[in-house]
Length: 511
Image 1 (cartoon, rainbow, N blue to C red):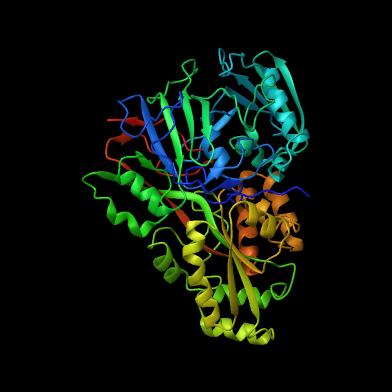
Image 2 (image 1 turned 135 degrees about the horizontal axis):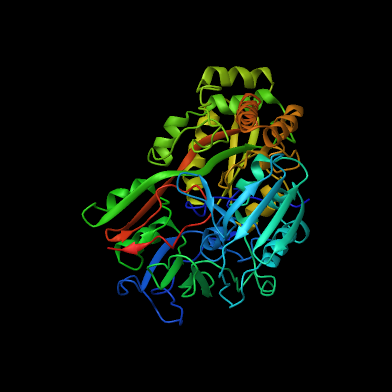
């Protein structure tokens, strides 16, 4: 069965586990420009900007490869969608300048913007949109393709109009069209998605030095407002120290996702700006419910009661982030603070573990080689050992080893990863075959009622689903990653909140 994931390699656009990303090397002097020469961070105003990140895509084809690092680069920059989200989460026009919905909520008619072209020179037509939607259903190989399941038919009405018919009303479908499944491809230039993506966006793909950087260049024929920077270099680093040093040495202009919050003191406000907002990145402590000891609800509850989440956040992430208690970030309509469902209570945790006959049980905590997991893993280990577990930890190289071992083969007891895809509760907890193996007979009914009901029913049902997971201890939700960006003082247009999968480069400028 095909599955998907998105871990935190990107915070701006950070779903599923940020998964198919390679930790890039910090080597190499400067960054490669479109021509292959070093662009550096000190290019003339309007010419170039360099952004430092810590997880590099393994491929540029998100139709067959999971991982937040791919749409972080491409979504909204190279590829665009019919509709998109603004910074408040509202759905607004994208490649479709307007759309209508039938009274039965099953038929959507999109009017495309005129005069839009792909960076390869081809004109965007309704044929490309219909082809792109059908490709998700027929050719995509990752689990996120299921988000297009409600579509029964996509058809061309005219050169600039598309009609999409759903098999039943779906509250989530239009929202999902703002994510990577809604990306519109050129049907005549889609044979090299892994290495040469072609879209309609404000930037065009230029070069990729594997292990070092990806370079995008401004699309001079873009239909909308042209970006300020002619060249954007996304430069990848192996560790947080190298990333921080690169900004301090002016090798880069922006740290796109801070991986060592305790180091923010290195960046005085006289020289740098710090952006702090929210993300969709729930740091999930997964428990493999398909095997002992975590097939016992009492043992899973013991984990949740045994972790002091506030102390954990203060210790391993410098207090940056938010405690949520669920798989729902505060920017979603059905958010509730569920941290009190299983409040920190060592005595309760010990009691539950004893009742289950599992005191002293050895469990293996398998951590991806990502900064937050490496920092927070030892704290989790210590807290669980204080309530009666024996915890063995190991590190799996991310993405390859972690994806194969934990995600695909479920060879783990406990693991930790940040799920960053928007509104991904149904993906992570709606399928018993997913790597968390959460199974509760009530979940399918709640998710169906949420998707097909009125907006009010959607909110009510999703709240019940989130509470069900918390009550059943389907996982522990350690905290919500913050959107932390540090940049040169004169960089403008940095996004405060990371509520989509893409890092919007088109808004960046220099004062």
